[in-house]
Every structure is written in structure tokens, then in C-alpha cells.
Image (cartoon, rainbow, N blue to C red):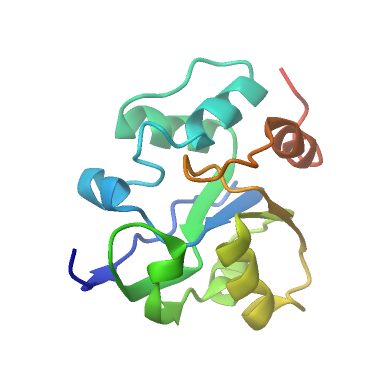
Amino acid sequence: MMTEKAVGFEPFCDINSKILILGSFPSVKSRKVEFYYGNPQNRFWSTVSEFFGEETPVTVDDKKNFLLKHDIALWDMVTECEIKGSMDSEIKNYKVAEIKNLLQKIKIKYIILNGGKAYEIFTENYADIGVDYVKLPSTSPANTRFSKGEWFDALSRVFKRA
């Protein structure tokens, strides 16, 4: 597998977004479907939908509607990089997302870092951002230490469960 120069997604949010969930960089499968957490094995969509007591959204439009309904913004810490495959360890020569610019436009109350690489890049660049944040276990299927309970606890800091 060759290293390729890849570009991530724009932030998905609106003026009502209360929580910002930051991943590292879109996987090959996500880049193919052109939206966040596109690998069906990734636990992200099943976890957040279960938290809200809803069915897991399947289509990109359903996912976007779900996020808007629940005031959730998504973005990645890396906006552009050289990468081979989907593993965070393969991210090289990357550009960091301009999180401060986003926070000037929307009033985020809480930031969740989805996994270690997102947290590492975030704290190197934005440790003093002035918004509470937490590192959570990656929802990636490659992560054997995933904890739905930790995700539910973090989400409940901003939202009431259904």
C-alpha cells in the first residue's frame, strides 16, 4: 500500500452545536463515502445513537440529520496529511485543524477527543483552549479497549439520556 496525500473533511456543525467530537483523520472507508466514521465496524454511530435511545443512522443524510438534531459537531484534528491506509500511526506531514476559528463561530460547551492520536495533537496545539475537553477510547474497530460507558459518561455531561 502506497503513501498518499489525503485531505480530510470540513467540520460538520451548525450554530446550535454544543459538543465537538474530534477524531484524528478519516479512514479509507470514510474518505470513500465522504463522511465521518464511514467504516460500518466503527462503533461511533452505534454508541451515540444508543446514548440518545435511537436507531443507528445508516445513510450519510441520516447521520447528518442525527448530528443536527442532537447539536453535535464533528471534525478531525488533521485536515491534510500523507497516509498509508487508515492507521493513526501512518499519519505523516500533517496540517492541524484550526479549532480556535471554529470556536469563534459556534458556542461549543465541551470537546471529546476520539482516541489517543486526536488527543495528542489537540493537547500539543490547543491545551489552553478554554473549553473543557476529555480524551475517550477510540471508537475504531482496531481499538480493543473501547468503553461505551466512558462515552456515555462524557455525553451525559452535556446531554440528558433518552
